[in-house]
Image (cartoon, rainbow, N blue to C red; front, side, top):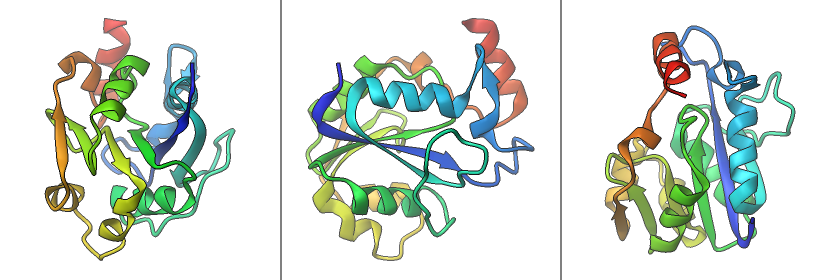
Length: 172
């Protein structure tokens, strides 16, 4: 059930140079990574936003500066109407609603999984930290009161290359 007090920010990514094509449009289990992540965010959050390059996606995206996750997070936090936002990268297709809820529950200024920095939960009041010009997400999070949440490592599998997607598909 979606939490009325949570905003989900889906980072759909940019050029995906290591992957060779937009990861958001890569398919897994009959749907794109973007569709899969959008559905997950909707299962947890009453408000859903997406940031990044939106070409070919079935939902609208917020424009960002195209300089990585910090810019996408800033765009999402600016548009968020709730005090806590869950940030989900499009390239972590094994994340679960329960894992995202654990992050939201642990959020002080922020909450990250043990491998951080994504996925994460952020308080909307942290927006100025994301607008200060730092491009490295880990550095921004170091300046915040950030909780670490132990999540199942399997859920944090990341798709950077086509082989990663094939391994994940074989494990499902």
